[in-house]
Image (tube, rainbow over the protein chains, first blue to last red):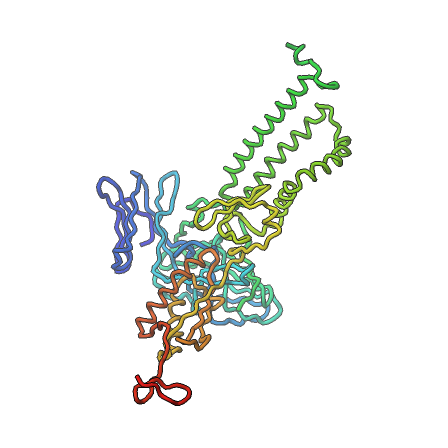
Length: 238
Length: 279
């Protein structure tokens, strides 16, 4: 399903129906999920030539965009001092549909087959609202449903001189680099500074060779972003 | 022509000097307008609206004040003299325009302390709504029913301000009554499932659902939920009805107020003295 298409295309499976077709002299984008034709999304494309790009995007837009942070909770991992450990987690996927011409790109639609849940990381006065997801911990790349889950390769780096228990990781969306192919992936690092504080960031590389890079939402929306080091988890790791 | 410009207005000040001052001031106003307009274009998608407003005002007034200071020597105005005169004039102006100055100073402190920002939902002295703008002298509120209210900054600064969205998350609660015959544990389980299914009912801090009191007509279940401040009212509106529907779908009803009346064996009303009153 992911890829670049000409305007006249249609994708259909049991869960998703989407495409662009000519209707009444207009090009019309249409999308619905499952059999819910009541919740159909339709948009007229006022454009003659261009492409439609469909790819996984940062999972922080539904049902309404209220945060830039993603929190993944997992079963506790106790990391020994001054060590490095690689684990794999799953993250929820949101699918972005973009209309692209030579000069510009814009977001047509964002949808997901997952339910959403949000959470607060930190105290109410200074914490951050996060999209929340619970994942199992995997030693190897797990099998996933390409339209529902992605895989994060999480490199845990304990730079402290004590054992540290980690059971959640919080990321900021601006650094997310999503790649897709036979799976959807991100590569991230959590650098543990002490039992309470860690720093997370993303690496701009796929989990496997041959994967394509997703178009990021903040690029499509032309949101200027100052290059950041990462997100500082200062309210605990469990 | 030159003679007209050289007409002495007072002291050594000629018409030309005054014209130069007026022209510089007009030019500074135009420059301030152009600079702020361009800054607005450049920064509107990079900086938050309330911060941008403050930046624009500082730049605007900064350019004008700089221009005024630059042209004062043209009028032979000595700033050191102004300081002495300013002390006396300040006293006079201060007494004459106490409230104006108080509003101005309060406005400056509001911009520094920033207890409220443009777009926040607040309540001040019984006025609730969205902060539309924070001017130098006043704060503009748009009430929830769309009414424009101007509050002097002195009042804003000295009043208790309730800012509903200053923190990223806030809690709200319901009190749900169920019948005495219903299973309260089952009701709590159902309510928790409804909360869990709502995306913006926060996972952490976790919601609390418990039997709070045994009321006159119902067993009262207290429900406390945290939600992101920006959407809390939407969540509050959506969840209560969903809970009611889900409870009733599972056979748990929300009772009407009721009073149990006991009748005597022979159909009379049993009273404390022991004597029955015949029906």
